[in-house]
Amino acid sequence: MDKVAVIRAVIEKFRATMADHESAAGAAREGATGDEVSSDGKYDTRATEASYLARGHAMQYEAMLEDLRTLEAYRVPDYESDEEIGTGALVEVTVNRAKNFYFILPRGGGIDTAFGKHAVTVINARSPIARELKGKYKGDTFLFADGQMKGKIANVC
Image (cartoon, rainbow, N blue to C red; front, side):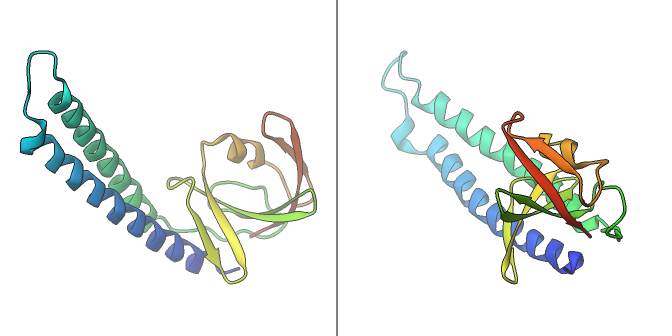
């Protein structure tokens, strides 16, 4: 699988998610400053709550922008199938006979993208499943979901 093409698809999906989030942040800003949130008395907290929501959206957007910049600048390393798994590895695992593809990246965890006929899930390099996969090799088994599920590493690239 072409990891450079996969990361491009991840970045495009991330941009689309950011555009949706930016729209929501704009609506929250508008809601925080609009006439409908003017106070009806000293116990009316609608304006305060709306401003908290707008601030949260703005902070989330800034964090996403930093993640996007990191992903755009990231140079995906090449892995041989017999190398130890680390950040930048695209790992094919089997769990209960189902194939899953995890792309371990420094940022952008939780993004799912389709690549060809496969779904690829980005996992943050500091996530529990990434910590479980790192240091392992093709053919190794691993536990996740708090030890409730067992998987096997089918391939690394």
